[in-house]
Image (cartoon, rainbow, N blue to C red; front, side, top):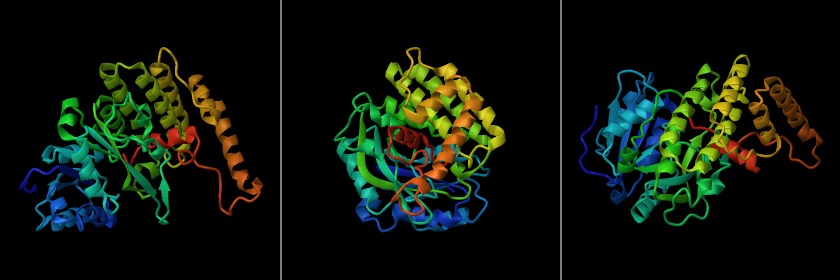
Length: 375
């Protein structure tokens, strides 16, 4: 079922849906609930039922009844997050498109702020800030959020190269539809589908705007999210980075872009291989070997700037394909982290070492921006 559009909205919000019955209503209401009439007229919500096994399809049909701005696409088989987004994009009619995950939600006041910035700046890409929301209710600032400060009007990536290190997800970017079509970008199947989609948007854009405001609440720790799932499908990251590298070979002529993305790629791999919740110990050696192979394959001819500290040491071990040394370093680092709270005078009870991707150091910021979303 796809409701026929009754107007041409400024913004289409595409929401792929699968197995999120407990969170779906919160997501939908955060988009359309309580919007002033003038704002609601500028927004279209395209929800894609990706053959959800629970009551999500029924909930979507019920929610769309009597709401002309809601359109439901029903898929007959489960295709995954990326291809479900593509299906929604095919029927979206807005001048801009925003991909919102169905277990996340928008804070109050987001859409008027986003629409206002789109009208004011008319960007190719609008970057927005987010908070990581834990099941305990704790809200956590992302390690890359500070990179969004101080951008007024529209810039190119060459003007603000640090924007390349903002978390590379689809949901923190509102994209002009015609620009998306000009680049010919669509999502690929598999996990980590944001990798070959998100970076090209920033590289190809002539007009990047930033809304330095929390416009997205990113749910953490949900059962079934890939960042919380042990699976061999985390090896999909290698295929997605190969797609990105091929795109850059054809489109990214600036050497600094290839150099910066190489470092971010290795950081991302190290986040994944070091996470017990993603890569099973039996698969870790094979994953590390693949990282080392990509290091050799894509190392820029002029080298690159390695991070400092432990992160830089891990880069060196990858360059040498030294898995035994890597596991020794990883074990020592974890032991030191476990001992730290007891050894630190005056530290609050329960505090511990800063986990990768959540700290204040440059290395942690880069690792935090490397953490992909739910796919």
